[in-house]
Amino acid sequence: MIDVYLYRSYTPMKKLSITSFINLMFIFISETAVAQMQFLEQRPYEPPSFEQYPSSACVDHHHPYTNVVDNLFLRFDGSEFNSNIISGDCLNGSSCYDGHPGTDYFMPFNTPILAPAGGYVLWASFSPAADPCPGGIEPNGEQGTIIIAHGNDYFTVYLHMTSPLEVEVGQTVDTGDTLGYAGDTGCATSTHLHFEVRKGNWFFDSIEPYVVDPFGWWGNFADPIEEFRGNRSEWLWLSESLVDDGDNGFERFRGPDWTYLSQGHNNDSWIAPSTQNPNESRHYAMWSPTIETGVEYDIEIFVTSGIEVTSGAIYEVYIKSENGTSTKTDVVIDQSTSQDTFVSIGTVILNEGESLAIILRDIVAPNSSGSNVVFDAIRIKPSTTSSINPTGSNSNQYGKIKLGSASPNPFNSSIFINYELKSSANVQVSVHSISGKEILSKNINSLLAGKHLFSWDGKNKLGSDCPSGVYFFSITSDAIYQSKKIVYLK
Ligand SMILES: [Zn+2]
Image (tube, rainbow, N blue to C red; front, top):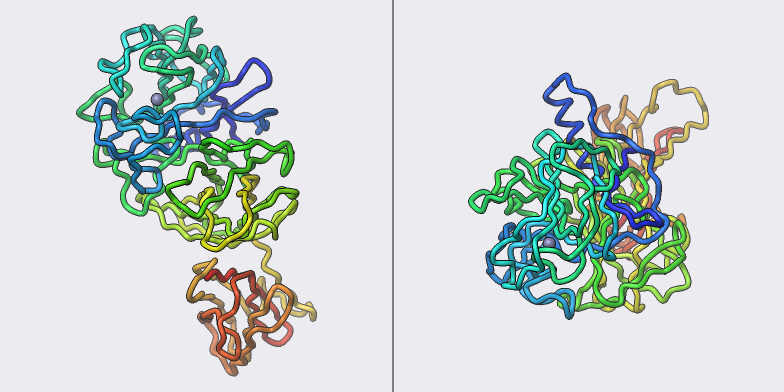
């Protein structure tokens, strides 16, 4: 696994991940077939021993450049905000920022800021900050700024650094090198790191603003940044298989009452009060795993026990297409049913060019009970589709039947399951509940060889609607039996 460090405190180590930032560069290298040495260091994954620093202001997708006040903040998921989403410290200056082109991370003064990837120092100086400062505040002296060129047109930018800067223009840095220290210089009202990823342009250009949102664009229409810039935001913090809250694939946004617990997966988790009012939403966590295309994966959640949890947590499953737009499926889960163990909430198969991410918010489903949403861990595991051939006589790779994809899964109205027969056969298709009760069964005789489709509308054999939950679709022919987990959500 590739792992990169952005910053850490003196002790213990802290990090922010931009794993896919690195992956992007590798992809670029391989696609263009440039004979080029890998210039970024790969490190084994090392979980931080303490909490990460929260991000408290994100890229404004309406106007991803400073000094534009339109009183709108187009959030990463496409929704508009024009009010404070962190109470108290959001007066056109935080997450309802107009024209914020980066991500702010709050951390103690003097926290060392580390290079997230190798590169070349393009800029390292104290110089006048933006004039005027966003929000019209007075600058706090000259701003400590560092800009690193990482190659392939990617640049990272670090603002509000305090003295001394530990690098000089022209110097080459390695992953993990200390660049300088978090401060409050320039247009900052409190100590934070303003971090930007830029693509295609390292200097400020108000005509052609530079920003790329490292949290990525989640909305179901084209990323507005593409309009300004010709590039688009990317999920730059992908992780492999397991995504825990200390991992580089986990990012979160915190407001008041976001509470750390020394329990749960890897002995850490977070809770936030649940709300049914979107306007009161203060918290979200995003998980983004790296998964292969064309392979079916289970999405599994882990929720620590001992907490009064919501019965209506909404896991938003996003699949981002090659052109940058996302489709979302909401999976509503009673968090008390998945405590202290990984429980599947659905399966997913990605096509070429697609990527997967999951968001959990403090907003819960209507009529749910329980006062907390737990943000703990997510695991993405290749699905285990059972295949039993008791006679052992069939030497074909998958015997007579090949069970294909089930989509959408989870499903809301109907699910479509593909299967393929190697030769003509009598088959039985059935659906069972998680406790093994037969919901539906159908014999189909003399079905021809080739591809077939089974659809299920969530109704039992009497035509009544089944409750939301996990079901198993199975197909049997002679001694061949295959099954697949499906999730019904109403
Ligand atoms: Zn900022």
